[in-house]
Length: 233
Image (cartoon, rainbow, N blue to C red; front, side, top):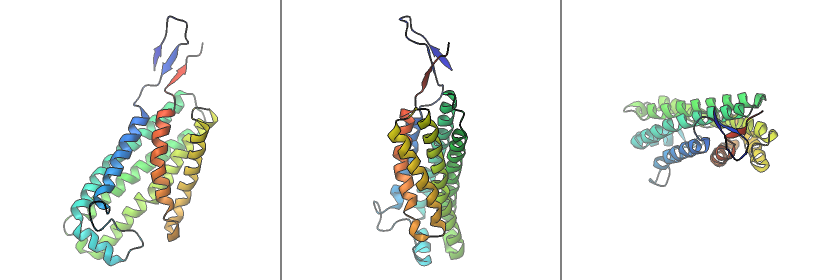
């Protein structure tokens, strides 16, 4: 920690050493959103299949769009790194503010798990897009559901823990605006409920409902969580 003092009598403060988590969240969001472009209707008449599509459609997509899937996998794998850095930095900053609640450890667990599942999903995408893999329909479907499970609820559930853990702890300590803390708790609950998508197909909408508002929350919280504290005399 670095100390900053002033000759005019203003309080001495300590600054948390580490990257700006708001900037890190922007990098994560930019990489992840960029990864979606090649596999959406923006650049093609087909899009990455959903679990509700037929097996034939799934297999046909990966046979015809392997190059786009590989590029998507590359960017998503890259996005997993800043997500992990964000979680570690936010936890460290809360500890810097002397947070003692279990929510910090829960947030760190959720963030590292979310980062890991994004990486696993991306590597499974890279695998399914390799020459010859999509020729085996059974293997293609198995890899697809691994991609969905790790990149869907496997990501949104621990992301909910990350957001809720930070929100509750920082909200109680008044380190984040009340509205942002409440928004984070709501997102955290939605993230946990997204696990229902594994058994209830109608709950699939909870995954993007966690993911996309979650981008905004990560950026906002990263910039709003204070990086300095007053030095105790």
